[in-house]
Length: 274
Image: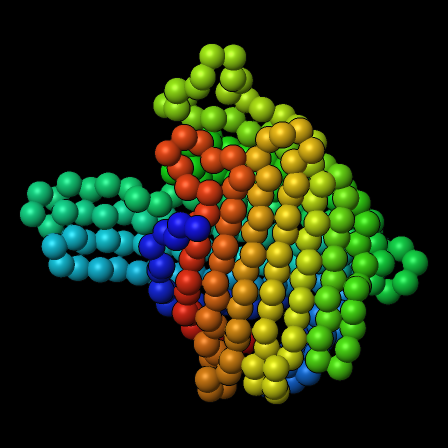
């Protein structure tokens, strides 16, 4: 297994909503005692709520580098629908201090949307999901997925909840024009897949929580299968300021030539909640 450079950053995360009936972040330990379901219930009917993270890293020396990271999770919770929107982007530029030559070393943005139609029991739903990923250094112009299926809660305990979504979908990708393809290989590829997503949340203590998100997209057409995993530990520092340590893992079973199958990120970030 090959690993890319580990990046440690500091970012500001803003948790916003349109109108607060009760603010679960007013006392962080109260949030630690609430499940995801209870948090959604607090904001039921609101136009939008969630969090926004912004990260910035600057290095000086023989090589100057600047990196920006923007990430957000936004939600809507209505009588019959619960919707989630995600944005994750990264940009990094390096400059040689002697020649002033600049080079972009990372440029990626990812967006996704999921709508869950509530049926039957509280946590049972039918979902539709879509995402779009553009990574300048992956060899792909873009990749996109659409899937639909069934979601429910696997386990609910005093401190732990585990939710899942599973269903079939379609995958499409386009290879960069700069990449030379073998004879007969199409630049645009389409296929079927099976998508499985798991979300595990554990309240470690009144001031600390653990989150584990995993999604697996298994190709049924002999194309790329993908795995995404984010492991995060969030702990209160003081008041509304918390420390978040996260590890992100991305796997692509069929990368372009001279590209690696695995990307990883390790981050330590400051989160401001209000």
